[in-house]
Structure formats: structure tokens, C-alpha cells
Image: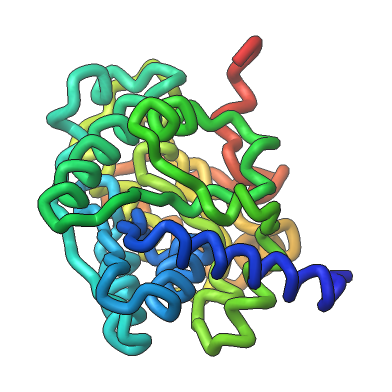
Length: 273
């Protein structure tokens, strides 16, 4: 259970840090963490805070639309930045450090935008929990001097959810999502067609109110992950229609992963990283 006194202290330290920074550009995906950071930065710095969302082939349209709507509703200064991961050298080949190439290009673009806007710092939504996962994007962040205020103040995901709820942010109970490229096994080429197939297949699950899910792309096979408690419903109530719709997207086989959803399941194939 979250200690309220400790949580309040962390929030106050975060606010003090943001005020000391003076101006900040937040890499804003519309997820739980970056939405909270963008909101607090906006409260503390007003027009000296800018939230920027990268719009690309690997970013689902519905999530981009939600990010735009949230920023507008909460008075967060916001901008879309058109990007293309597929144009980044090394990205299409999908090495295990794929995220490094993507984040390096993104942070470079955000840094240039910040400079043109007279903004002193670029920040991401890295939290205290993220140290436990394999994240090559961290290397890119450090190289481009991107700061992580949530991490700096030891804020964990559940604490951020609680603080977000207190601020009326709809993201407080939002499921975790990631770049669509994370659905394709390392070493297999990333193409626009694969990304589109994954996005549309996940839309099938989203339309049936599954909260947390992934569709992993294995050539002509789509491997579906949902929360363990949702497996019975998918396997019985909506199985037939999901199979039909996902096959219509070009997959020959549709499978259900009985291990259920787990974050970063593609990393299970890695060793020594």
C-alpha cells in the first residue's frame, strides 16, 4: 500500500525539480507516466513546458488521438512531431538493441526542437520501476542528456497511477502499451505492412474491451497475449470472431498464449543482455 505522506513528499520534490529546471520539453506518448509528467510540468511551468508526441508508423493512431485529447482537455501545451522509425538506419533489421536506434533519433529530434523553442531540457517518463527491465533506450537518453524526473524522485508506476487519479487524469488506470515494433521477434525485418497488421489485429481485441493485450507477429502466425483472467473469455465467448477477423488481416494461424500477457515477452529470447 502506498504511504500517502511519502507520496506527497515525492510529488513536492518533483515539483521543486521542475521549477528549478525553468523550462522543459516532455517526450509525451499519452501513457501513464509521460501524461503525469506533462501535467505536473504544465502546472509548474505553464508556457515553459511543452509536451511533444512522436507520430509514426510504430505508434497506434488511437493512442496518438488520446494523447492529443488529454493534452487539450488539461491545458497542456502540446505538439505532434512527425517521425519515421523505418527510415532510421539499423531499425528495420530489428536487432536486440532496436530501441536504442529509435530513441537516439527521437531524442536528437526533440533536442533540436527544444533548442529552437528556447527550452533548456528534454525529459522522458522513465520511472523507478523501469530499471528492472531491458531498456537499451536508456543509453540513448543518457547520450542525448535527456533527464528522467520521475526516476530521479523514485516514483513508481503505482504511485504515479495514484497521483494521476487525484488529478483527474484518465490515464491513471490505463494499460501499458509500447511501440508496435516490439511485437516482432528480434532479427526479423520490421516493415510497414507488419506494423499495420499488428495494429489492426490489436484493434480487434480493443474493440472487445480487452484491457491489456499484445498481438505478436510471427510470420503467418499471430500470437495473442491477454491477461490470464481474460483467457477464458477470449477462448470461449469471442474466439470465433477474433480468429476470423485476425485471419482476414493476412495471418494464416491465430494462437492464444496460455502464459498470458507479460510485459516485454519478446525479451525472453535474449540472454546476456
